[in-house]
Length: 380
Image (cartoon, rainbow, N blue to C red; front, side, top):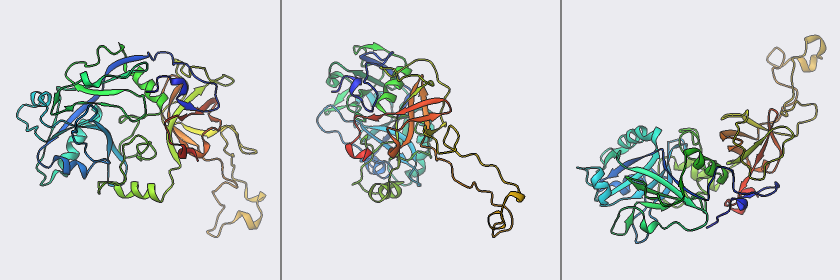
């Protein structure tokens, strides 16, 4: 397991120590809810909706799997971890009266739990399944950058099925478990949610509805293929057509990557993180720091409609009668957009061919980092 954040990134900046506020080991409960899908058709039903095959429960420890559900246009509805919980006594106790012999637990953002229930019931049709909310169970996360986590001692076990998994979206990120009480209480110290967010941002891993905006985010732009959340050799599922076509024939021009913001003239701190907030926020557009000739600081060219007297007959009148409303030269396109921030770090979508360039948002300098776990082909 990679235990040092100083090897997380490939960039021109000098390299990193462990960021302020991120302990070597820690644990917390996540704001995630659990939806139970049970019944004889549960595996077949989920296979037709998710970007991955529902995991089975083989002998071993790590059984959970990362994936997502898309809408018919190939946009993400929610990201999820899927756990096979067939016959789990923990689940039977939490959901009395529900047949848990063939059951999966899907971990989703709490803000999207009700929508997940509605979507599953909408697609249910004649499938022999039951969909319910496992309200008594929680999702816990832990990491230890100095030692491997022992998942063998975590979670309830029956038929070699543990309700826990390594979080393999990025190597060394941590582990997750489902329980009624904290199963990681002996792993480091209890931390606040912002510490978990900071750790994810530095790894370049988005999560939840605030970062993976429902019905807008494309799975490949959000690196779900890099994180093992999309299988390209499985059968049909909702939203598959656009995803497969982009993978095989299209080009993914933008991807989510870590961002570091600095004040004018300020160097990137060695440990990257500074707690104070910057004057940037979600939705802010990122521009190349090197403007076009005669362009403003953001690389755009101001345009003022010339008066009719200053125009020649050949360039002042369009075929449709009247002056053209378009600039004489196009300004620079944004290189990306901010998704989320915490202090002076965050996540944003960045054009891959622009990674390594200098960016700006107004007077704020922006540095895009390439996570170490991206495949080498990502930036070619």
